[in-house]
Length: 276
Image 1: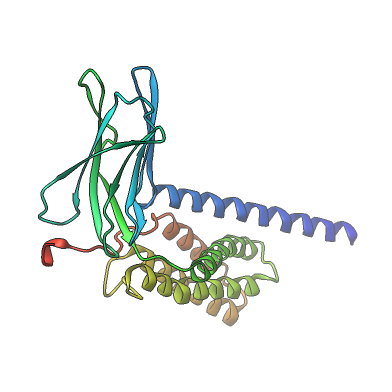
Image 2 (image 1 turned 90 degrees about the horizontal axis):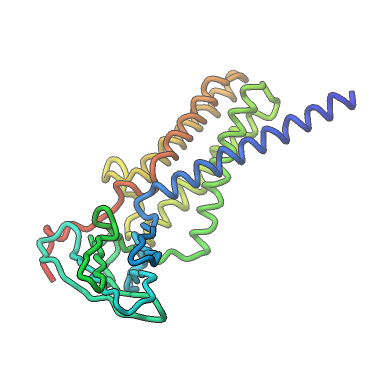
């Protein structure tokens, strides 16, 4: 009997560990492939390694700092930019040397306003190097209070973790399956369907920008995952064995969270408003 209890605890520990690995892997993948993740890299010029860090997200009210770690004064860089989706002409801003780094700034935009930009580096022999393979787009957003953002992130993280663990529980016909299913749905409700729109309101002054009013994949995918778990919980409560429903909900959750965060999100079309 003791051996059975030990084996059960060991199995539960291994399943939780696997769920954590799956969750962390999906979080890292989503973060790094999302449209708000900075563009960073290095180039070698005259035997010097030069790093760069190009922002793709910034709070409204703060200029976006574009940074190049070029310590030699003979390097010159130019920031070429304009508002995204506008009739603006390209503007050129020279970088200034600050504490061993070349820095330039993009002006703040209203929430959902975007700027498209690229950076070129000119060496002392006249060689011009474009530091990014293609122009970078940065989106500005309203600041979200930590009291709202942190619980939102924690609840969504917990929902993703529980989704994986619940699928495993259903697969092995665990007696905890219904409880895990209900908890997964609850965390999606709290983190995605309640706190999610509040975060969206702070960031872009709109509670919901997904279907049917918009194309924000973050809103849409959260709704899809939540509905999948509501159906799975209903089937588990009704039949006591909703293995297919629960595993399907977990697969749907993993699939939608592999979609980059903030893809097709809110943006201002400057061509449709008065030029400033």
